[in-house]
Image (cartoon, rainbow, N blue to C red; front, side, top):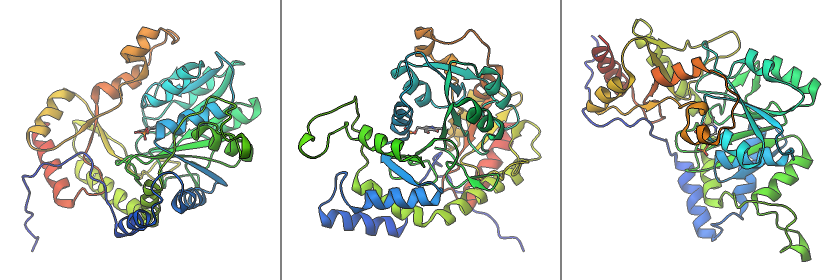
Length: 377
Ligand SMILES: Cc1ncc(COP(=O)(O)O)c(C=O)c1O
């Protein structure tokens, strides 16, 4: 006989992180040692372990994923007005670092099939002024990067792979975050592994590695020259305590990916027959979807109405990104090409994601799906 499910009335947050025993032990170790700022064994250890996990030689831990993008781009030493291609549909961090460095952002629209930046448009936008592309993986699937990587190599265009949402994901048998000149990650509480706030830049290039370490630490000099600074740096250091949490999380990465797959596949199976929404499949030609979050697009219902109704039932959701060309500040700056990005606008107008954190339970998913199906009549 089927067990009757007890559906709780409690609030279901869009994300609940999972903290394991190892993190608590590591943090206590840190506190006892007194090494609580950015010096101490856990920073090095986290960088080594995380770069090894992603098949990269070097890691530079920083205080968040935005900082990771900023020092990654700065380390490439591009010139004023050099063009950097990014998707319109992403977090604002990418365009901000381009603007702050005096570079020119070139936007591309999204791909309807996987919600990532369009590969065709990215290639079309490449010209002699293009000096870097930030390949940004969004939500569940990696960007189908092969063609972009080949052209970039031929034309000596630098690649930063923004793998903030893709920890543990593979693309053609290799880890996302192991492609391109540099890759960046975020360890915010909703990411696959978290340090509370945190981020990292990975590379195989020793020269870039040395520059990144300097940039994250105010470009301090060495030895007698410690208080001489030879470039504009940042204090973007990650603390030993945060790194200690990261080491603990990384130990549990297999469980984390398994849980993400469990949550994503359960939503998929329960929602695949709902004719009022579009959801991503568990697999495409290139990769398995490991579901950073479980997103959906509404076909005819109003997004705000549906999200509000879910909230009335104690279910928190999160809107998809608002594309960069629609941002007040970006419009005010008037720095973009006069193009249209209809697919990213549609993603924003119709898309949101359901609670998909590591703490999301089976019973919560049943409740969420049941409520959503009722709203979407
Ligand atoms: C694709 C992507 N890049 C960068 C970031 C920025 O990371 P952080 O919030 O740690 O600054 C995020 C954050 O969600 C992200 O989703």
